[in-house]
Image 1 (cartoon, rainbow, N blue to C red):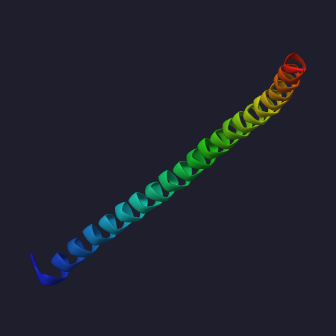
Image 2: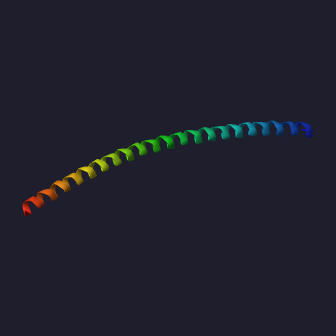
Image 3: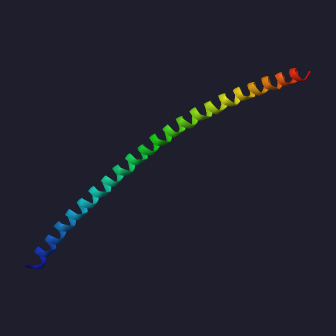
Length: 80
């Protein structure tokens, strides 16, 4: 086998490796993009749940305040 044939074989293999490497990079980009979308979706769900919990806490806090006011008023009436 002469040098020219050997060089041709090496170049063909290099082209094949280069093509496979580009395919791997492309797949990694796709995986990265899909993970970003998954993370965005998860954060959106967490945000919605936190908003719901905040609403519940605010509601219960308001109710507790009203009940405390009524209890205080009743205690004052009983003491008088």
